[in-house]
Image (cartoon, rainbow, N blue to C red; front, side, top):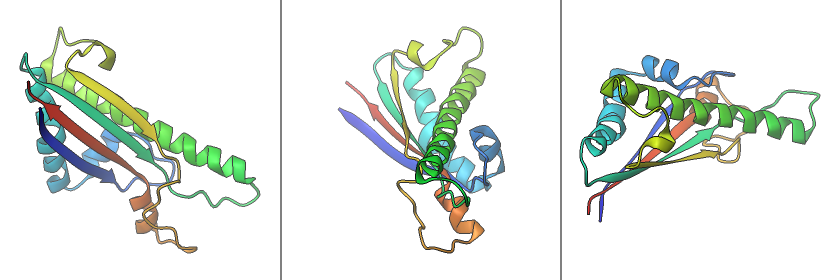
Length: 155
């Protein structure tokens, strides 16, 4: 039975920035509190029980690359690479936070957690929030984001 569905976004990445924990450390306290309450502590709760499971789906997004002199394919590859790096960093960062919380004896990888399934989706620049021809830095930062979806289940 589905217990909780939580979705939240960590955005504001600068051009070329992909490190999730660095970004998380610089968000406003309210956003960090939202991450802790909607994602992190719910994962901790699942891992502290024997009868709950969860699915954590992570999406990495990039901004449109407007560099001159590149082919459409080269632009697409840059956008996709940024989103792959961003979503992989989110997965690694959240796992590191869990490892720090639980300490010695915590499994070495997501694949070793029987109660939590994870999914990684790299969206490239295919799902822009802002796509006008002339974007502000704030709009570009909103496009560069990680979206987390957590579904928890109880028997």
